[in-house]
Image (cartoon, rainbow, N blue to C red):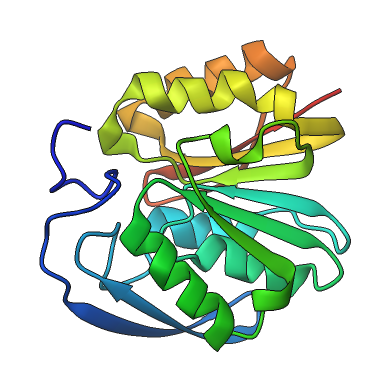
Length: 202
C-alpha cells in the first residue's frame, strides 16, 4: 500500500493505543485486545459480527481466516471446531501480534497457526474446508475480487467460501463474481446493509 496509515499495511504508522473488548460470540465469552492501526479497534464491527454469528463451521475442519486482523473470526472458528485447525493470516504485523495474544488469552493457541503474508501467499499448496473473510474493502474492489477468484485453488471439493460485504457498496458485484467462480452462491445472512455470501466448490 502507498500509505502505512491504512490498516492494510505491514507496519502501521499510528502510535499504538491499546483497547480491550469483552463480548460473547456463538456462546463463548471472549476477550480481545486491539489497538490503533488495526481494523475496527474499539468494537467488533457489524460485518465481522454478522459473519461470526452466521458462518458455517464443522468440527474437524481445516479453516482459513483470510485477513484475520486481531483475530475474532479465527478464534471463534477455533472454539467451534476444537478438533479442527485454523490458519489465520494478515499483512499487518501489529494485527498479527494482537491475534497471537488473543489466541492465547482465549485458550485456542494450540489449534491455530497465525501467519504473516499477502492474501493466499502464506498458504500455498494448502487446501481448506472453508475460507472465511471480511475483506479490506477500503483497499479496493480489485483486491476483494482477487480473493474470490483465487479461492477455489485453496478449497477441497465441497469446500465453502464465506465472505461478508456491504451489499450496496460493491456486494452485488462480488456476489455475481462468487456465482461465476463457483457456479453457485447464496446469502447466508443479512443485517444493517451487510450480507454474508457463500459459494460452494462442487
